[in-house]
Length: 174
Image 1 (tube, rainbow, N blue to C red):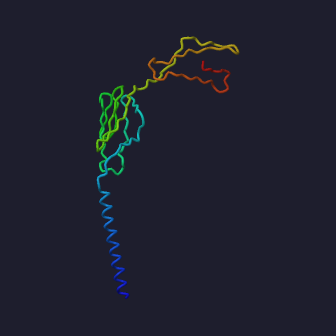
Image 2: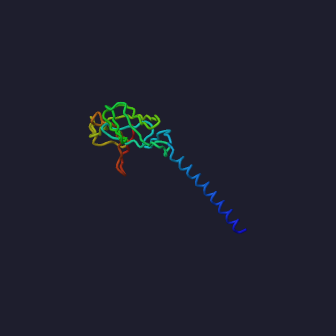
Image 3: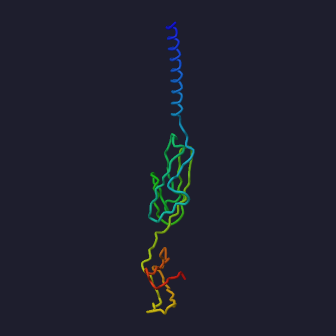
């Protein structure tokens, strides 16, 4: 009786292991199957990408799903005179303007990015006033400063003035 029980348990164990091994082989084969690309995700930008003329920008992108068989991305610029893009996703801005950069993956999946190449900023180098500054003011008196930022093509000509701490002068925005 003990021998029959031992033989039956052994046979059932072998049958169970055989079923598990068969299932494991089937699951492994499914994982090795070609998973197609469904989309391209861009993590380095959203909306229009602005790049200063002669500057660079690296596109950080990957295919979805992340376990896709072919993860290769290619990059293409619609106008290489405005901006070119390398195989590594680095955009080089050449001249001012707007251009589309296309990312392509397997299964004809594409994503277009809008790129705007903007001029290099021009710094303010000096402030100029045509009016002579008064030597003194009476209490409650005012003097309006007419200040002009130079050069005339400076990118940001906005000026803000602050009085010294404990000053008897008040500066207004008008």
